Image 1 (cartoon, rainbow, N blue to C red):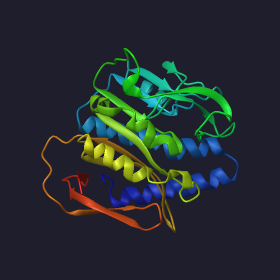
Image 2: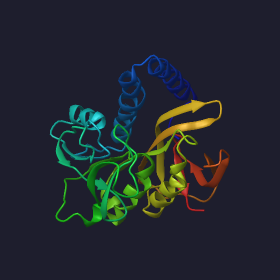
Image 3: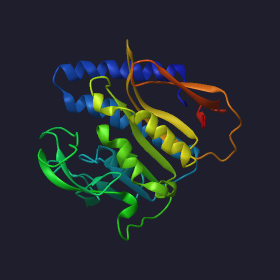
Image 4: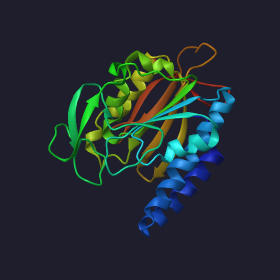
Length: 263
């Protein structure tokens, strides 16, 4: 992971401050300070290192464009495409009021005010489910960056990109969100890693991380392709769904990134 020990300590401190704000009732301050400003700043640093100036930012689970707004301010003239089915949210750019998935159909949210998608209609709202790779005529300028944050539906939204995921220079994914409080996350973390490896994204950098005494309850990763081949086969460790760890192959990169190898 391309974050030094000092950086991790600083991130952890900010998260503790965020929790104080959160428990004091300032939820928006908590969300912005921890998740959006810090994470986008790290993504911008990564894009600079990779020498990409994105022309398109696709925001899946856009909410009120906390990420899209940061990209619009950072890169003049960038096109923002926002996918957000929640009628209570108001994203910027070209807006698509649909939920991306690994299948087509219709669904709703479990409840109003939440972001968890139900397996069938009957909750709050009613919206279309669609695979990204099935959307007709959807093209965009490159290089492009993608962010996916759909709570426990994230891996399904990601898989719906199919081979089109290769059209992106950097893909930012919410990997884990306060498990085991959300058992619906299931094997999402492992599914995401496998999908990105299968599509040759072998560079990965933590861009938002939260720590607790029991593990890592929240983190976002930015995936990207490497300009040099990956050598064989050291190990890395990730939190598992049962509170333990899962091992996979990895090589440590020159700047401390995780250069991923299939197991």
